[in-house]
Image (cartoon, rainbow, N blue to C red):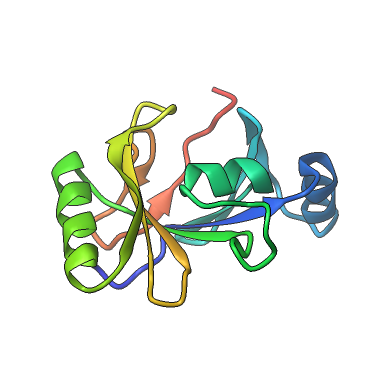
Amino acid sequence: MEQRISLITLGVADLGRAKEFYESLGWRGQELERTVFFQAGGSAFVLWGREELAADCGLPAGRADAFGGVCLAHNVRSRAEVDELIAAAARAGATITKPAGETFYGGYAGVFTDPDGHPWEIAHNPGFTLAADGTLTLPDFTA
């Protein structure tokens, strides 16, 4: 697994309020399917409903100690890499909370938690450009 984070997703209580907050700080977001994406240097910062994010990670959202509202993502170049990294995480002692599979956005992803319960999504998203150095560039969702 390359040493990088592609996306940081925050689970928020009110997507509109969160988007307005970050835009008032000067960030420019792109809203797509109940999420808001912000290019953040060579990675992306994403806002998504807390309950939806927890469910997408295969985690319960009801208890305060069950899901912290943050998911880290590591994007890769192929579906095979997703399978390889999910298997490597399991061998390393991770808990697989969502086995690798097809996603609603046309990609392929799985989720594991580290020993402290922090979720990591391993994803192949054919719509995101991933440079040789791991830099992620978001597409123009308005195009």
